[in-house]
Image (tube, rainbow, N blue to C red; front, side, top):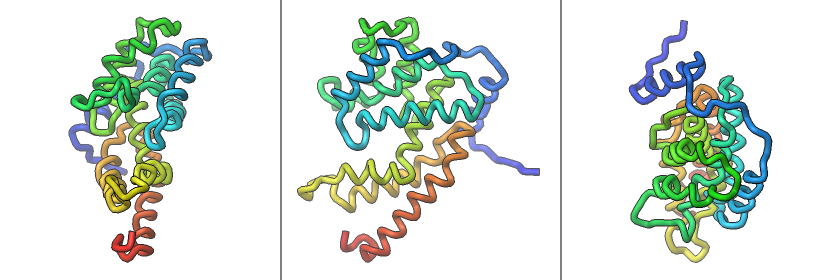
Amino acid sequence: MLTMHLDAPLLRHACLFAAILLGVPQAHAAAPAGPGQWRVTVQEFAAAHFKNPAWGYSHSQRDYALAQQMAAADHIALDDDVLFAAAYLHDMAAFKPWEDEKQDHADVAARLVDTILKGTGFPLAKVDAVRAAIRTHMFDRDPIGAESLYLHDADALDWLGAIGVARILALADPNGAEPTGPSVVKMLVDNLDKVPARVLSPAGRALLPQRTAELRQYLQDLRRESEDLRTL
């Protein structure tokens, strides 16, 4: 018999997952909708405006696909309208003109997301659910609701594995300013230390061993080939 000991945050989210799985009514638990014009509009907007190798358009694509994959593995029905809008717009406040350096980008994006969705044909009755998913997408926040949970876990997992390495290394300044090579390696170490414990869904946790092993192996190889980072 396998006995698991969960800390308080994991226990709270295990209870959330159990409620979802057992059919406790959740807001916006509709079947996935087919692609509509508003989706094309949002996708084209994201592709045109969110250009960054770490948190740009391609990151949004991966988050959306991985959230769908994990929810399906856990047999959870998501409102795909909410997930799609949140996945493609969750990092909008990391870019100008929506950026506000005095506030967390998740909070700013949650507040402003309706300005992007209005007039696209998006069902605006679902905007509050989109706001909730965006507000808690970072690994250190606590998601409430299925769409929020799976976007949160997809976003966390995208900091790990080979893709996590690629994202972080792309941030290094080519002219030697911050972040430098050693600085981005510290980001990778921090992600390996902090992110895994914050992946909360069963399907997300099932993906952790491979992704953490890939990141850990990369760091070991890098240290070996750079005299423990002294020649990096």
